[in-house]
Amino acid sequence: MDSGYYAAMTGLVARFQALDTAASNLANASTPGYRAEREFFRSALLGPDALNSQLGETVNNYGLLGGDRLSMTQGALQQTGNPLDLAIEGQGFFEVQTANGLRFTRDGSFHRTRNGQLVTAAGEPVLSATGQPIPVPPGEVTVGADGAVSVDGGVAAIVGVFTFPPGTELTPEGANRYIAPKGVTPLPAKDAAIHQGAIESANQDVIQGSLNLIVMQRQAEMMQRALTIFHTEFNKFATEDLPKV
Image (tube, rainbow, N blue to C red; front, side):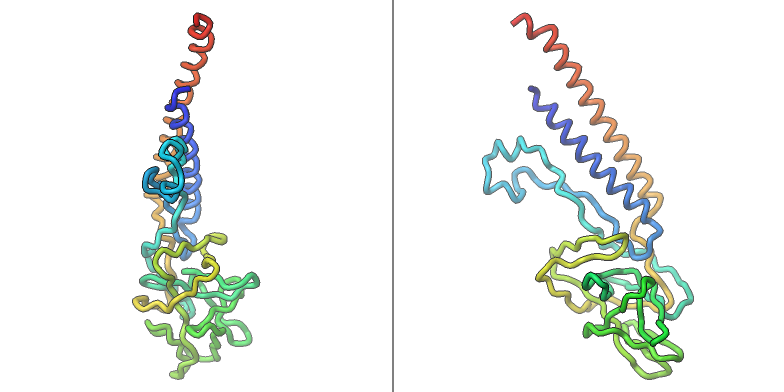
């Protein structure tokens, strides 16, 4: 069987996966703190299987789509006027205590509970730089670029902003929160600045996302046409040429 058939099939599968990613990015273009996902392709000769398998097996595997990675580019900051809304400029994530464990997010849509604690829109505690819930007593709240939360001039806590060692792949959970791999310890962000009264938009542009979706659709259609051509040729060979052998 012509190897081009397998190549076209793998291309179709890869384009469908990329189409799902593009659709998800576009659907979350208005989600605060959303990190768009970008597909990546692994090298057949330099990929993780290259040293442990025969060259023929590696090349004929055809599974060149390695998966998706989070894009860490900066999203636009939008002013809200809410003094408890916080946006991160630079690399880093807020740390949140959830019922399922620690989660990380760029969504700074926070508010103060009745018992005076800084929480997310879902009511989950936002953690300080020392990993503790952040108290917010009654009064005028000011948050500095370093995350220091001051109420009526007195510092109550410092909002934690954390990064991870290079190469760390976070796992998305829902639209805009992420899980760190087991055994990976978050590190205090050194170059991040917090903006009070603002939230960060998704780092996915609606126009670019729409274009990406159209491109993925066109490429998937091309792969489908290629498979149709191969299938037609196989049928012709089976019904006309093979009986003559």
